[in-house]
Image (tube, rainbow, N blue to C red; front, side):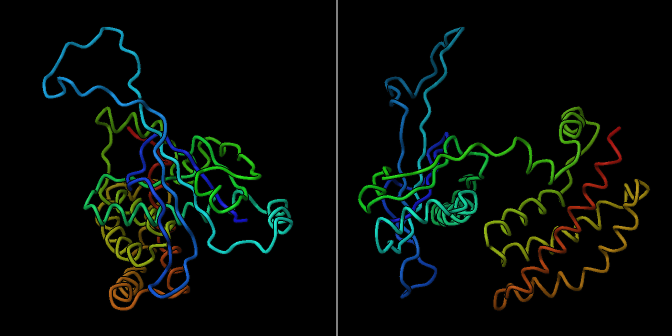
Length: 281
């Protein structure tokens, strides 16, 4: 009996369907097995696909593929009773968070291996279905189980509200030409995604760029709220960010340095929220 987490998302995940052994370093025992499957949508006819054709005035929705990923722990339970006890006492959301880190590590590797900048990772809110359970080896490898629980969807907008203020107002301002997206915002988002996925080295490198861009771009709004104070504080983080980036290039980061990356990144995010809090004219 093995424990597993499973998600289904409304797109093909990218890697070819099959089973993938996941280990941190060569020579170590595997820690997970990832099973990727593409489900659902019937194949569309390809006849005449090379030429444009008339479109129906009221078309039916195009069929889409559904991707399913099952992340299976490599270490089996000693008995079915132990598996059942584990499921009764497990924190399903914590288990799902760990599984998504494993899945996104694989999707990141797929993006690098295929040189595909548009391959996407999976957030908890992306899942059409999320399950945590236990089952026999071949059973879970085929997407089935002995016993499982289905997790409710996460609260709508929870992550978005913690990351940005007034997102709908900002969206209208961006689309209406009353505001502009800043380079530092993109670098911050990339750094946050890398940090959440456990890619501390990449996050440290993105952080250095994000901080420099923020210090160059945000002074135009220095009179908004307490942004001037925040910028002054961010200026004092330059040396630390540079040191972290240098360490990331040379040897990687230890846990204390990764925490420092998170701290400085949080301060840059707070400065961006302070700019948004003043509104958009």
